Length: 364
Image 1: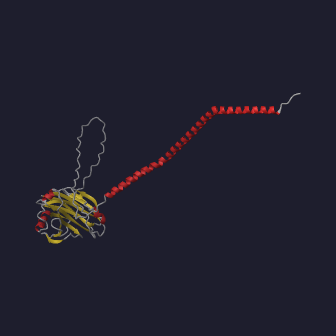
Image 2 (image 1 turned 90 degrees about the vertical axis):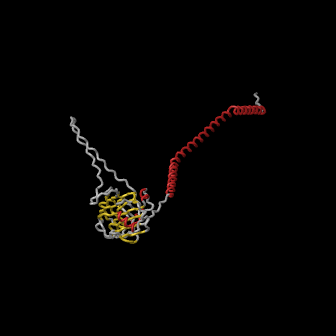
């Protein structure tokens, strides 16, 4: 008869099996710790390094992209800043140089002008002997420069060269709407000009003197004469003007050195319409011309008004100066002459044309 094992034996076997299982698990744990754990640590380290690298790379790429989007907008700001600095510096420079207010003087001093060059004449080519070459058509020649028109007048040329100048006090002229439009001029020993003059209607201030200016810069000559031929506007109604000489006297030394510091102004009025000289009447010359004086006899103005208007004639300037010296209106110290001028003072010319058909000065 077979014997069945007892319960105690079975329990022992189970206990032994459990112990063997525990030993196997313990051994497996030791093997895991010694073999597998370091490898997993390395794998984890690689994974972490890769993740960190990817993060850093992404950050740098994003920063670069943002910088590239910002740069185009930043550059114009820099250019505008430079422009604004330049503009502010320009404004500050303009602020340092304020325009000066023009102070009105009795008359502006003329400046010498260089005469216009005489056009050169080309030599006439000598014809060559005929040859066997084929004939060619001559090249068209350019038209010669047209010279300044000569004055149409009976006035003869003088010994002093004269040049036209508008002679305008621009600061004062703009206030009264004064303008000079030159329509013709011819310079030299026989000069002429024509101008259109205008200003605000009712103006009575002299702010210009378009004239022929004949610079001398010398001692007073023994003889000094002048000839003129003028054409005032055909209709002078409402206009205010005069044709007159303007002569500047000083000492011979000052005149020779072009010194305008202490000079006397001598005017000789040949044609008057609506104008009155400055100062007051102090006497008459031998031909009946009225003498007006404004200021002193050193740096003032002496005006001689002919007995009647003349559109053409001759004036003995040396004789007039001599008579004024004997009357005490020009000092004996005035032995020099800076220049002789002849032109028009027109506070209101009404847009009309004023002509000097011919003018000359002769000194001897």
